[in-house]
Amino acid sequence: MAQTEIRITNEGKEFRNEVMATHGADKLMQCYQCGTCSSDCPVAKRVPEFRPRNIARLAIYGQKDRLLSGDLVWLCAGCYTCYERCPQKVHVSEIVSALRQLALREGKIHPTIKSIVTSIPKHGYISEIGEFENEMRGEDGLPPAPTPATEEIKTIMKKTGILSRVGGE
Ligand code: SF4
Ligand code: SF4
Image 1 (cartoon, protein in one colour):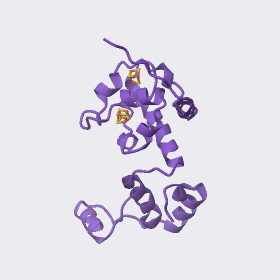
Image 2: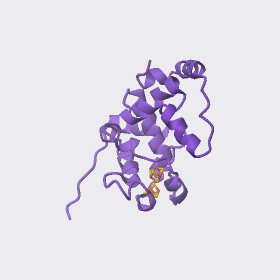
Image 3: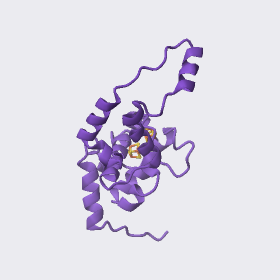
């Protein structure tokens, strides 16, 4: 079979270095593509295009555009199965986290994550809890959800810069 040479551009190498400089993602180059992470990943069982092994491979080859555009890195459920299973301790979960940080730095965020993050300073929760939700809680014998200190939450989120990062107020 004819072999295709894969060239990694300098930009690709820089991107790979950026990924590896992020906490927990430094073992990227130890991946030998065994596929153990993909075989046990719960998201990979349901989403054909999501394979942790491929994410590691694309990061090794510095494929920034393929990794940061689209939904790919936002599909990970953060279950840490790949973290536990990898024989090389590559920790794809941490590589995904690094990729998300790099995407955020470029103002790229999945709309669902943006909606969750911007809901927190407004409602104190990842979604609004209103009368209906409290009625449901009551039916299960639970008290109404506590009223969160949204102003304090907003202040903290502004000071940490997370709101401006996701394009919130
Ligand atoms: S990240 Fe680990 S488990 Fe996944 S393909 Fe690479 S070496 Fe195998
Ligand atoms: S942490 Fe993400 S990539 Fe790893 S097994 Fe769980 S869903 Fe898959």
